[in-house]
Length: 169
Image (cartoon, rainbow, N blue to C red; front, top):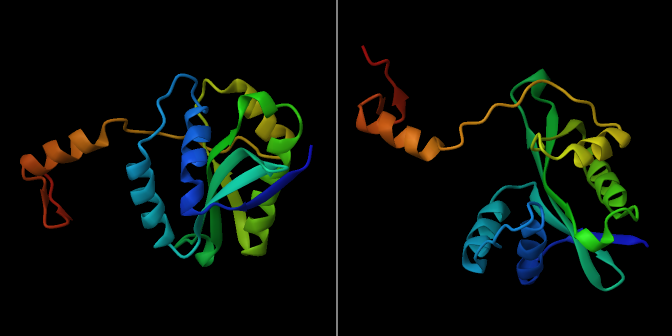
């Protein structure tokens, strides 16, 4: 199988949403109206794109790539890879490898000093796959799963005022 990767368009969103729902089996696909809003927001960033991979005429894979200038490392460019999925019945044929290599190529062409991604701890197979491509475990990832609720509570307590953080006494 050979993979052709191209930038996704608004018309591709139903397939992209369906592929992304395969990342965690049993996940309900995102409503198309919400995906369209997010896709419009992504287009506001100069280098934030969603890509779709095809085996022949069949869409079988997707990923998003954000390339940005950072204030660290002398302003070096970085790339962040997200939403990496190959449809279940096409895994194991080298399509994921080809897709990641395209993300690497795009990142290198943009002058990025690194390409990073994060992956849920439960995805051991994906971790082995990424390591086989040269990715190295780096640092520790931390998340606050309910950040909206925390932010709202901080705002209600007066800890956040007009974009400035104050320390509650």
